[in-house]
Length: 353
Image (cartoon, rainbow, N blue to C red; front, side):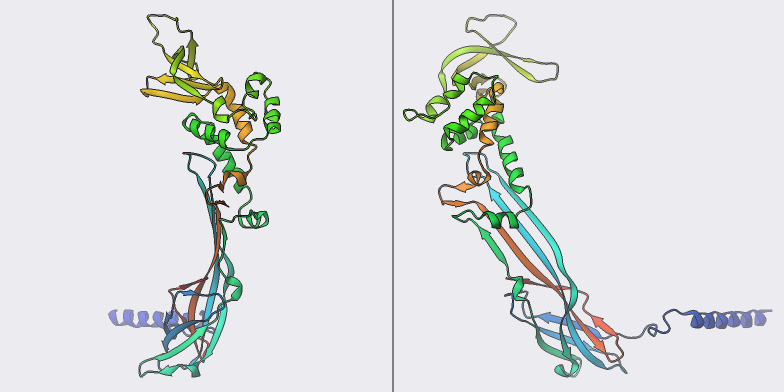
């Protein structure tokens, strides 16, 4: 019984092997386990000027019975773009908006081929000292901090909507209480035209036009004179309550207001649109734009174009920059005369400038 079992097992194994040989889908393509060329290489450098060649040292060998035929360098090209713009028309508010994009612009393809005859045998393996080319069209491009604004370059380099997102963020921050001084700084230092003031004043019929007209600069006045807060003079008192939505409400009352159950704090003399007060929670004097005037000042500074927000008055240039860079992801491949190919698995990068 044992002998019969062994013979049967051997017969089944033979049948199984025969079946594999008959139905092996790779039989006409390659021999299972056939050796590939063993390949390694080193680059002479990882940075190159676009259009120059890059030196390399390739090493390879094949198994006994296989003959090297030629070698190749393949390259994938990627492009990286980055840019930023920095707010300059402010005093303490710091803001830089940036972007970065990366993309493969050329699929992996052969860029150079070398016959096996170029390699030398060193007693252990074949050594190929050669170079592969780079393209002149892949030069690094830099633009920015220019004294003259170049609209065509900006629109071609920066993503659509970049400037709108920049100004929207800046305007949104400046109308917050925390950046009161910055908003005042912008009003004083930016050259708003009288017609711009009048246009915005006309949009806010809910406000006293006579008060708003005092913001328009005259030949005899200074902007800082009409935007002030005098903490030496208390003109009113106020107390805080909370509305149904949980918002703090500031209730202003006359100086002679008296209620033993209500604690009041000082309100100081200031421009009509300025609310200058002592805040007990923070233990200091707080100055902000009155809520009813916030929309007016937001509409006013919305008139400032993107280029004026980023203009550096000290260096006399626009605080914007853009860079486009290219990289080559290169691979070394060796073919034998049977068409088998071995290649380096670690893709090396070459930055072009």
